[in-house]
Length: 428
Image (cartoon, rainbow, N blue to C red; front, side):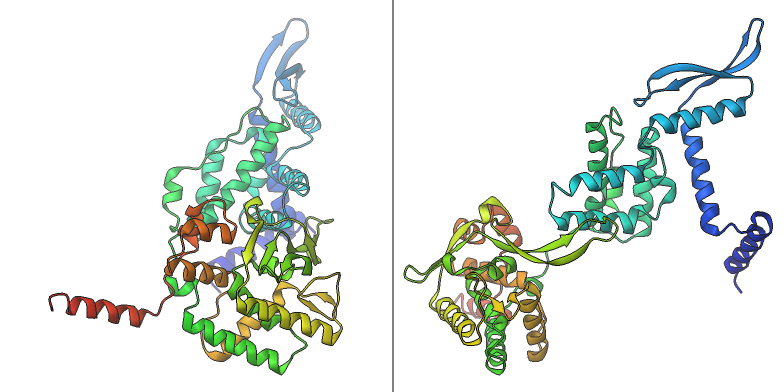
């Protein structure tokens, strides 16, 4: 038995002997409560005073909800005065700790942001905040910048985080404290992130071209595999959806929300203005779960509402999907990608793409990488970046250029061409 186990066994023995039925969790809670009380007392200055004819007293200014002096209190016994201080403080401060603030902030945000954002807040809280009990049980009014420095420093020290993940963790606390200011729980925010902590995180670097896109050769292999899959099971149009994604460069939610009224077959255009999104049950913020999917009449951003040209291949694929819907009796208010239960969920397309890549022996890249392949193909063939930006629905061309354009050409052919050019540069 190693030293840690021996110490743990001794601790359990002492707890059982001294505390009877108290558990480790009970002891931890007692410790946190003690720390919380000490933090409250640290906000108050107690002084001693001799009152003529009455004797020696301990005196303090009790604070209001904004930590301003409210009224004086005095006791002959300092312990009794400290009990009064703690009771009064907790009474006037309905919101006491960082943890209390988190749950109130989360409830407030449910009506303002998308469920995915709430899920990200919860993930960061559970993975990084909830484990530091000393920090989350601190009263927010006694929270100091040095407390936040130590909290973030411990996270960086114990986790291999990139700058994006660390930024997300920091953002949660920053927003919580700004909310506390808006509610007038605090008059100013102690939030800060030391620069040296950011430097200790792993930089987010642009990924290699091969990780972000499908080459032309791979696209052909994938589409051939999707044809095979559809021919084997013509009642499932998800493989046709994979092929159509390569033609349109749309987000997977936009693809699954396509409606007959969005498609102009004569002009060969499609109007993108809605998306299929996950519908979450958030009645219990500790148990958020997906309740299904729903079509919403808005896109990810205002700029994402756009009109796209339909290639000959795209028209053919759409017609095949509609023919399958008619043959198998699929109908749901004019939506295009259907199965027997209604609109197909995004995972139907994702599953076909993943299993298809595995079967043909190429690396699986998500449906979002199809979107990047679409952009890269256009860019590498001379289409202006501002045009690609509009086709993708981005607000800025810099987003398109930085995150969506990659070299998806065959590297061996490129290198061979380079060698030929350099080998022949002095000839003729």
